[in-house]
Amino acid sequence: MNNRRQGILYIIMAGFFFALMTFFVRLSGDLPTMEKAFFRNAVAAIIAFGTLVKSKEKFALKKENIPDLFMRSLCGTLGLICNFYAIDKLNIADANILNKLSPFFAILMSYFILKEKANKIEWLSVIVAFTGALFVVKPSFNMQFVYAMIGVCGGLGAGIAYTFVRKLGKKGERGPIIVLCFSVFSCVVTLPFLIFQFKPMSLLQFVFLILAGVAAAGGQFSITKAYTKAPARDISVFDYTQVLFAALLGFIFLDQIPDMLSLIGYVIIIGSAVFKWAYIRKQTQNA
Image 1 (cartoon, rainbow, N blue to C red):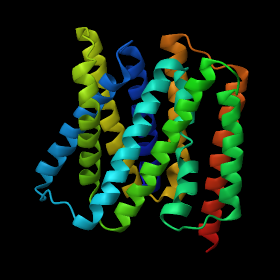
Image 2: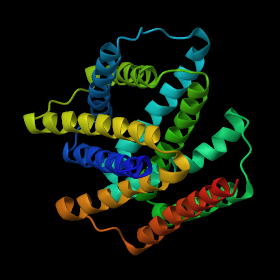
Image 3: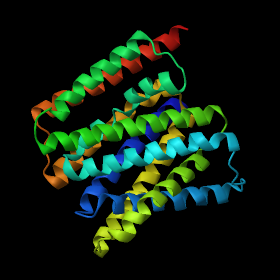
Image 4: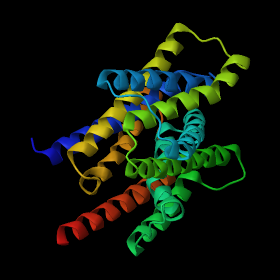
């Protein structure tokens, strides 16, 4: 199996793991969002710390990277909290597709944060994707619209966080350091809510939260492995298999069936991603 096929396999595995994470978060029931976020990130922090120890690399923060690490951690934490809240309130496929607006938000944020100018095709893909999001959000005067907009905010937070990850990567910061800082920061932010608003959980709920953390770690390691095997232009579009896996899990185990408007939104958003991916791949091959 060549590197490109391995990369595709790993990114599909990542999509499955991240869909599993949202599934287990939903199965954990009516626990507070902050409680769910704490346990998910505590598992990730332990795994990231273990990776650093195993690699025998020194844990040392570059002073000039601290502001960017803070912004990555802050935006990532806010995005994660919004995403978890949306998972509890929406169809899990809807929550996943709204979170997958993050690459399009990253195009916007890269313009402001990295001073990278997008081309016309990338701007067009952003406009089309946000148009598709309207079909999922369904603007109206009810709480479902509010929940959906919180899901969109989750995608925004993730998009900004990924932009800072790219900035840190360009400055030579190591992946495990970025993950560990984010996970520890998230635990610190959510810990006060856990202490003062702790809701006792059953053994099964605890197991589901641990499984959510393990699945998230599996997704993180799989997607990291994918991008070491093949460039983003070849494999990034396969990340959207997460929406398919989430829809299948929701349909089989939760009796969730996306409505027609949501399905139209899925097609538009994923179609926009496929179009952008195909264009970039063609441009690269012709270069």
